[in-house]
Image (cartoon, one colour):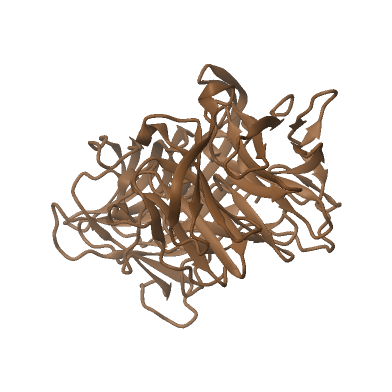
Length: 543
């Protein structure tokens, strides 16, 4: 779909045109591992792997579900925020914030396997963006930012000593940097390192869409820290550029992974060369006499000592596996009975099955599709693309509805409902996504577009097209030439002729890019009878 590797020893940015928000990464030997935030989607925190920093695959999820019971519902914008991944003395550590619940730690000796049950090492709201750090003397520390929406102030970084095994915090929490006292407003996302006797904290400031990369340094863990801006947008098209990770190669090169917020598609991932000048990093490429770098859009691939195959995260799914593909996430913490894998078109478990059975999950009446718990969703994988899906609806029962949804702040769906008389009705649905399920639901507009009496297979075609660019104003600053996209869903009964298009201008959700996928639901408020299911044969992406 989107290939960053140009096949000639060079790469283009972004390295991932997908919503891997707030990335952090490490190198262990000749392997690179990267994680990202996932908010209220589950499984949570995708783990990506690469050998060359350009070609990536999703290989695992850190969490099978978001901690805490309330995430059985899709609480948009809450959940797992910007995490950090580290490797220390044979153990992988992932520290992640949940802004309403606290700072959590989970560990593993095998990153591809099962991670430990997360422990809340700092309960309470307010702290975000934590990063653990182990010093040469064996002591450990945690640096973190704050969320004004939860704690009442922002632009402040805290440091606290941590137990060496990562199981808790100890000592006094201290403010080590206050961006409100200088020109580093909204400083956040700190990542801590050590080099040549200097303690470094890489932290973006200025806001997600309009900011820059700042680096702090000190000879003492608790400061005082001096600071320097090391990357700005400059003349590049990369607004932000926002938080990320410093990684090196076995050949001694330094690189920086970060994200750019492109609105509807979310926060896409870039890779920048990094150099050093008087023990200060310079990220990107300098222009003229500037003492900071600007992002590159094309560059020589990192020298990792070998050549590796070109790859990208999976998208198309023929549903031949015995478990959910790693390209999928649910809209909330899943129950075990939501889906069955390796089935035939009638939903029966069979060897070598090439269908997934999606059971119609009971819901309260009038719950909008955007807040269904069991939306099975994928990220956008490219600036433009088409996706076709085929489902069988013969397993639906009265009170069931199912379909294809595009989930952003403004969402659309083509929804199939089965009535008590057995007839199949098709609706075009448009709605506004709620940012918090504790709010009153927004009413949906449902337009009846057809009635069917004798169909089993239904096809959906989902298309994303770039229709231009738009300038935005964010906190008084301008973001120029942000992409604008048009989303369209169409339906067919033969897979050839598509009709009844429903379209919307794309608009991102709460700090996440637009996602799309399938669902099956049952109105348990009106028809409390047995629910049915649909089976999906495939979901196929093309550019």
